[in-house]
Amino acid sequence: MVERAGIYARISSDREGDNLAVSRQLADCEALAERKDWAIVERYVDADVSAYSGKLRPEYRRMLEDIEAGAISAVVVYHADRLHRHPRELEDFIALCERTQTKMATVSGDLDLSTHEGQLMARITGAVARKESDDKSRRTTRKHEELAEAGKVSGGGSRPYGYEEDKRTVRPEEAEVIRELARRVLAGDSLKSLAKDLNGRGIPTAGGKEWSPQQIGRMLQRARYSGQRERHGQIVNSKAEWPAIITPAQTDKLRAKLRDPGRRTNRAARRYLLPRLLRCGHCGGQLVSRPRADHVARYVCASGPGFGGCGKLTILAEPVELFVSEAVLHRLESPLLPEAIRRPADDTKGAEWQAEAERAQAKLDELSEMWAADEITRGEYLKARAGIEKRLTKARKKLAQLNRQAALIPFIGDAKRVREEWPQMTLSRQAEIVRALVEYIEVAPARRGYNRFDPARLRPVWRV
Image (cartoon, rainbow, N blue to C red; front, side, top):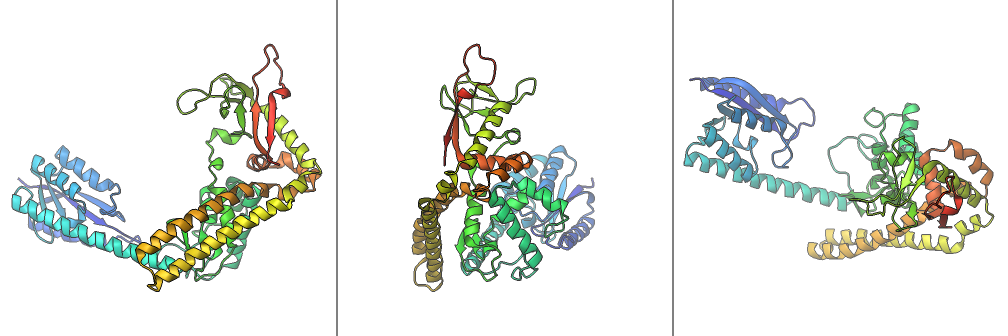
C-alpha cells in the first residue's frame, strides 16, 4: 500500500517574502518521498512563523487534523526541528503518530516514531534544537539590550516615519507632520480626526498607506521622536544617536495623555459628551451611557455584574449635555479663569514634576553608562534602576494630571472664539475641554411628578 504523505515546511523569518528557503525544503522533501515511493497528497507551509515562539501555526494544526482524520499516513520534513522546538509539542506528536500509525521521514535521516529508539532520537534532536533556540534568543535579547543602553539603532524593521532608510537622517516634510500631530493631540484633537485629516490631505504613512488612529497613537508615544532610546516601552537612554524631532517634555506629555485610562472608551461612549463624569446622587456610582429601547440617548446608574451601581437613576443625555456645555462656556468667560489656569503655583508644580522626570531620566542614563563601563554588576544595575523608574513613573503621572489644562490654553482670554468654534468641534475636543474644567457632576434623583429637565439635579464639581 502506497503511503499518502504530507510535506511540512517552515521558515521562522521571511523578511524578503520570497519563500526561497521554504521552496528548498519542499524540493528536498519531494525528492525523498519519491525515493520512498510515497505519494505526496498535501503540502503544509508555515512561512515566517517560529516554532520556538509558541504562536499558533495554522498549517501545522491543519496537518495534525489531517493525520487524525486519516487523510495522510506519513509526514516528510527537512529536519525534525522544523516540526517542533518544544518538548510538550513533540510528545503530543509522538502520541498521535503511535495512535494513528503514521510514519515520518526527514531529509536529514529517518525517524521511526513507532520504536523506542526512534522516539529517543526525536527527543534528543528536539532538546538540542530547543537549547539552540534558547541560546539564540538570549544572545539576541542581550544584543538589543546593549544597543538600547548605548542609544544605538537596532537592525531590521521598516523605516520609521520621519526618518530615512538609515533611521538616523530626518525627513523634513515628515518631521513637520509629526510636530503638527504632537501639537494637535496636546491641544485636544482626537486621533480619529487626525487620521481623517491626514488621509484627506493625501499624506501617506511610511509604507505608503492610509493612517489609522491606532497608528498615530503608537507613533506619537515612541521615544525615538524626542531623540531617546527605549526598550519594551521604557526609555533606557535619553541620548540616542539620531536627532530629535520633538522635545523629551513633549514625549512625556504625549505618553501621559495617550496612556491615560480615562481615554479608553467603548464604541457607544464616543457618541456621548460626558462618559465617566456623571455620578449617581443615590449611591455615588459612575453613570454609563445606555440608550433607551427607542434609541434615545441617556445616562444610567447601571447595576449588575461589572457595574456595581444601584440601578435607581437615569437622565436623558441631550439636555444634560447642553446644560454642561453652556456651564463650561460660561466658566471659560469668567475673568478669574485665566488667573486660575496660569497661577504661579500650578506653573511651579508643573515645572517641578518635569524637572523630577528629567532628573530621573538622567540618573537612568548615568546608571547605564556605569554598567557599560563595568563599574557596577548587572544585579546592582537592575536593583538601582527599579527605584529610579518608580520616581520617573510618579513624575509622569503627576504631569498627566496637570496636562489636562493644555486643552484650555488656546482659548484663555478669548471666550468669544470658543463659543464660535464649539458647535464645529469634534466631540472628543469638546470632551477634552470639559474634562479640563470639570472634576465630576453629581446627578440628584428626579423629583416625583416633574417630567421636564431639571437643572437643579446637577451639581458640577470644578477643577478650576
